[in-house]
Image 1 (tube, rainbow, N blue to C red):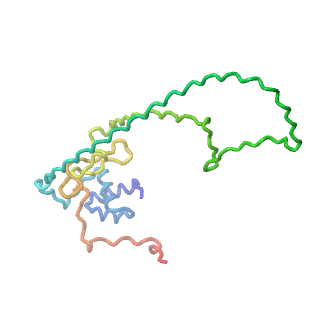
Image 2: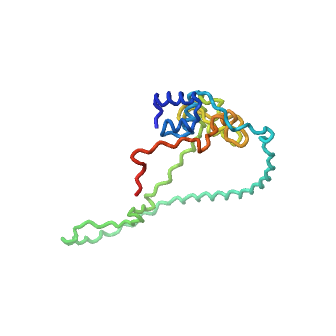
Image 3: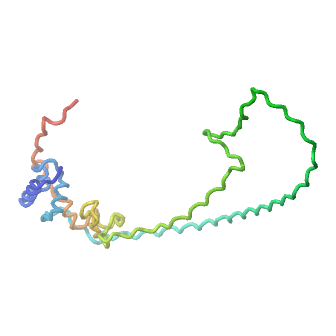
Length: 230
């Protein structure tokens, strides 16, 4: 449901008239009570008195944490294996003595007419249909590239000094400020009201008193008689 100018004006008029968020949601139709509260907060409308009261500050002090157990002593790493011995240099081949002159070989008989086809060469085929390379065709492995140095990105100037999503914990207010996707979107970051995820100011916005069930108006009838039952 989109917030049109007409619906925003109606929201402001009902809010200033003193209607609760539940009554405004029923009057507008198609919106929830939390959506009405969030839109009123973004429009800067005057906040309502909240039934939530600030807790005792003495209870907010967290109990001292138990000391962590001492870390186990690191296991001594095994010594690296000794480097393999360098291969021995290959012996230099000596020139072979000249072979004696042999008699002229006998003439080879001419092949028959039916044996003129070229001789087939057989290659070894590995798994997947790939030809295995002979020892003379193997190439040395490529040298791996040096590791790249990762440089952390600089934080944006729009959220410098503000509480981002990575800064949230159980002790600070998680109320979002702005819209997700905008460069200055952040969170409140103030100390929380004990027992609630927000600070005291944002608790007064998030939690508002509701009318008893008997005083609430019935919801408007659904169009076409409601969902069809099969």
